[in-house]
Image 1: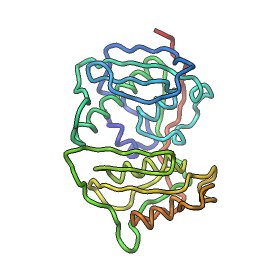
Image 2: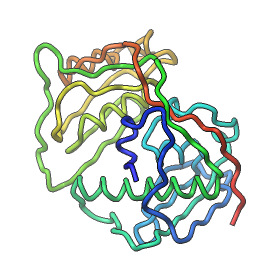
Image 3: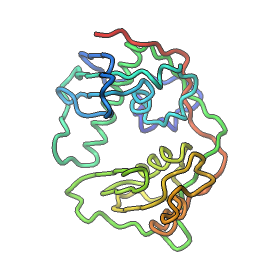
Image 4: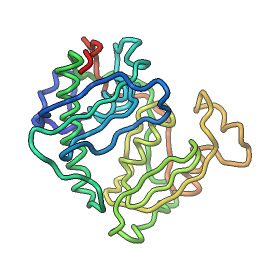
Length: 258
């Protein structure tokens, strides 16, 4: 099975079936009063999805952003589900400090299990392509980067976006930063920094406007995200157009409840 993290290398071809499977999965409509959503560990090292849409499940399972999925039906962004999957073989439970490799392994395995759930219970038929689309390229600024080595590697990875205007990262990678920027800016962000290690960093910036390429935000006291990257992290974000990996949905159906 091709790991989800290697999605960008799979272009214009069908995706292979997942290697890691689930034993039991429960799918129910989410409580309409629920306001929080997200993913957390499930039984036997499996996965819980709370108050998540099918699009949330897709972006998690294939480690991609919603703008990379083409052909999704309208309900996929509106209907919300509660899902609990149990692995076919017991996995580690991330309930304490874990190394980056351990956490990445757990995520990859459960991404694949969610792929299996989407295929079996949502009838998902998916193919990968590339399309020429707007994107951003992240590089190191002329003065060099201002990222710090992890102050305490034993504390593990932590990456948070707070209130849409602060990023706090501990022992985090450029991939994590690119993913966060893509989520905030609504476009694919390609990492061309050449930085492979883990870093501690913090960035404060203005809340992203509806069109992030235009205004800084409604808060003139904070710099734009582009200025913050340059001044606070020594990184540069450039707008370009280029090949972006996309996933075309040929079929996706509402699951039956169980």
